[in-house]
Length: 477
Image 1 (cartoon, rainbow, N blue to C red):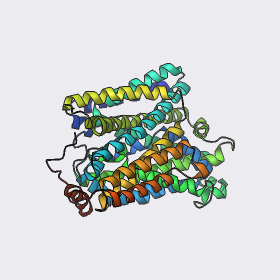
Image 2 (cartoon, rainbow, N blue to C red):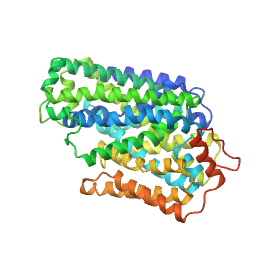
Image 3 (cartoon, helix red, strand yellow):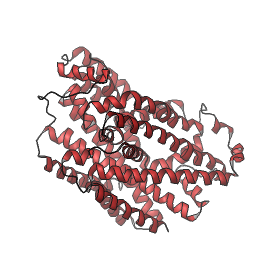
Image 4 (spheres, rainbow, N blue to C red):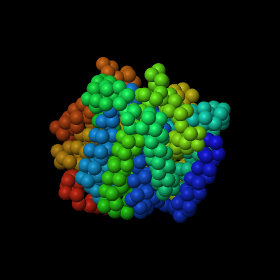
């Protein structure tokens, strides 16, 4: 049954991709889509951030950590989300930049653009590997297809669903996948409550799981996860910058961002959270981590288990598609474009070839390290170090070009090294990364050359909320 549902689902997705991408001609249309309706953008943002690891791993986390784990969606989606949507998103949209590295370029110059593009590429590649591992594991385990063929299927699907329609195709299919993912998780949550014995069964949940201020997970680790999650939601090119710039207007970007925040909270708290909390009673105590959702689904109607499995594949595909497109954008605009100029049509084909290389490399990497979580942690670590130089540069005129370069280089290097060292003393990698971000930024303020009038204009426009129009002299290559 799972195989039939997955095949029907994929046929539907490819039909939408072909329809949505039929008029894509220019590189901007390929990477930004061009005036996508804000509800579709909101769905794209949701689908880009909710991967298979969320639908599998977070269920196990809620079972073990309870309401303490719920602080992540509460603080990053319900509280920080609306603040970002109201005050930051409209300003970002008015800056008229395509990629995250473009913001750092107009504020700090070319060196910061290249460094940030490299960090983004590395971070997004890590998640692509994680999604490749998730997809291959699901296809191999649930459909019984051998490992090599599963990897080939993954590469083909990842590419076809991305290169055919660009962001417009990805956005429309991701919006559909977002609806499937959300509805499926809520239905499974309702069945989980029923298996618990309805709402009265919640009394059997261990008391420590109801206390959000318990220390089921060390607080220094918990705070690090929350800070890095907030950072990801702010500067993620695939989940924020790129889709928000596909909106028709700053107001549409605000609507999309607000909707994304509220839907994500409902999904994480009411959906995934409910499944995980009820699992603390309905599943054996020794069932932990990724095994929890499999135990939960065994008690569900067969068709619902099949749909949830298809929804996991959907989440994996939607995240992988968004990241492949974003990673190619970082490479073409932020790295390759600084060394040689290409025509619009050439940029489209370079992006497609680059995505092919990335997809193949990601398949090879899972033969070395198949751990989904380890790859995702690498991404969180790398991308969260972009937040401080990104925001600080847009908010203060004291920053120099050297501030951006040193903040990115110091912070990114420190966080990556700390992660490689497996977080000594139990300290989350975001903390040494952020500390070095700040140190590099301050050094640049005192030893760097003063910002140019154009760079100061960037700050004025962002702070006042006015539209930023680049001078003709600026060339993004």
